Image (cartoon, rainbow, N blue to C red; front, side):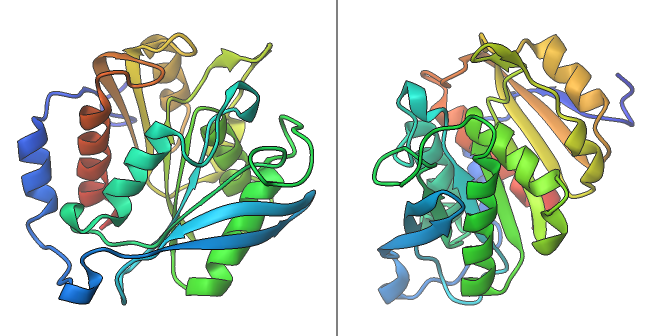
Length: 254
């Protein structure tokens, strides 16, 4: 991989240093905004109603955000730990972003209607983007973890992506294979927004070499970050995941 084409990194930044960088220009939260509320939301998806939660943000922030959960057949839902910790980076005043963040359950998960398909869930992501666009009328940051990363990629880089102002895409635990299939990410060629691929070097669904090949074929701006010792679930490495995500947002998105 050429250094000019992509950045393959180890997560060597200390959490304290990453947090310090993200707090250099904090959003001025008032006392009433220290603990933004959580609002239940009902989305109209292609297969029926989708259960969702909105972590409300500070006023006048530059982005709204969407996070997509891992595979529902294996227990993935909007309360997944990785998704929750990513939400905290984007929404919590501690991280100085304060963005409103929407999490939703894919069809067939939780209280969402419909039946799991494995591919059509990209339409669920588009329905969530429709709601965010209507509600906030501002650029959207999209993140997905594992299966959620696959669906986020297809929704945000596919044919209907032009209908939404997606300014950045974070793909956590992006799988190269799993659920009886090999994944291809050709749609990434359509995206010229900043893209993060963040995984561990012990991820059983994608090796560092496989992820490097995906990154190498992806247009700039992009970054591939491999966290040493982390598995697919970021077990015992959640803090590192959060700090790498925050560091990338500060450098590439803000």
